[in-house]
Image (cartoon, rainbow, N blue to C red; front, side):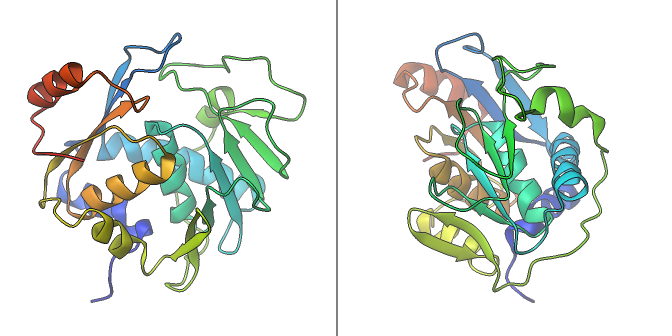
Length: 242
């Protein structure tokens, strides 16, 4: 049996238990979303990923060989765009200097790309939390119009680039292995507590947890008070903290 790829993660979670929470996100960043908690099952994740994936391939012709930039803070919405990119077989790039077909960003003004999508963190947002420059796509307003079911037009080969970050490239065939090498002691099915300071840390931790049918409790901001984090870990039934 071939090694799992990041494109397999969501299907594996859905087959294991579609209703189990797979990411619980606490927003500890200053601003209007401070204190927000959201919990997403694999079934709910599937809908968000489908909408993003359909936008990528139907609206912007993203496919294997395309490059999607993800220049956002670690957040559950970043996970949805990462999974959508991998599901349609494209390359996810965290490299700020990369040549991109689509850029998903939470920072304005955004750098140049053929398509720029502005991400708003608030879970129930129906429009952006900022005035957007002409041509920048409002994810909160536009994503809802895309379908809840995703049929990828093509699939990546194991040797295709899945993730570009910090001067390195991980292929579809080795990304899961690399994440497990980074976090080798994540138990199967574990509830994993993470407070990543970078989106790369977020992605590798989540891939490691999800590849073992686990789930994550995510603290956004990277500097959550240790006592608050400990209390949440107890309340959320955390097995392992990274």
